[in-house]
Image (cartoon, rainbow, N blue to C red; front, side):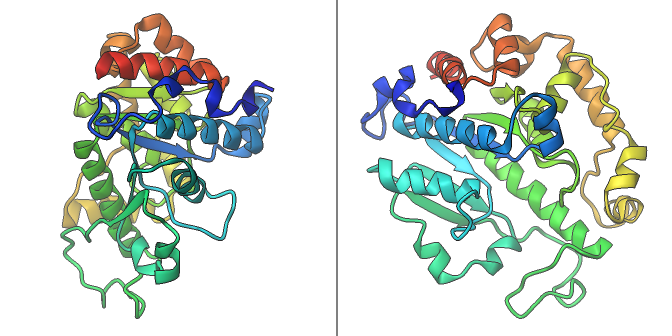
Length: 315
């Protein structure tokens, strides 16, 4: 039942209605939330519906507080379970100001129609993140008439990975903090699982980071590594098994530019940082005990309380 609490129960709602420019209204929080693999959820006694309800509750409380949200999810207005659609729908119904910035990477935004963009509403904005500086043209990438590049060949996947990293770097530079929850470990299009890459970018930038690992997925992988717990997924052998054109991608990065991240190197980097303790490395305003609790809880009310505490201290 706790997973179905709505935002009105969160202490953060005391900030609802603050004018833009107030303490929390000026706070920009990057969201990294996506589906955890079902098997991972089931191993924790959870379901995709539980995770969806938690995401909704967390997003609602952020909007109720007037916090500006930056999110990079895909627009799918005809898919009710799509997290971007649900977040934008909340913004349309609950906000009087433009609080959501959806950052769409190239070439994904080339598929967006005027009708889809029209559904975003006045409380959100879609930013078409530009194509990165690539050494290949649309012809070499076999782009469609609209400019879309399907992530199939090694060269196409290289272009996608470079673009996703560029978009995530931009979000890191324009957010005051980042919150990460869930996320697939395999089956991604970038150079790393999206939430793992976002965690690395935030930690390298000393950006405040909230890690919610109770729903498993990539967020739990990052937390385990910070705590010194080995994760068998974080090996090149696992990457070669699960990442399409893995070795060709490594070669393309070496030939054309960009930093390829070996999973072992990422794991070692996170283990080294974690030796400071979660409070010191995450810099999110929470103490060690609070971060440990946030890393485990699946109670959306407690998540909201802990995020509130950290944001209050940071702001």
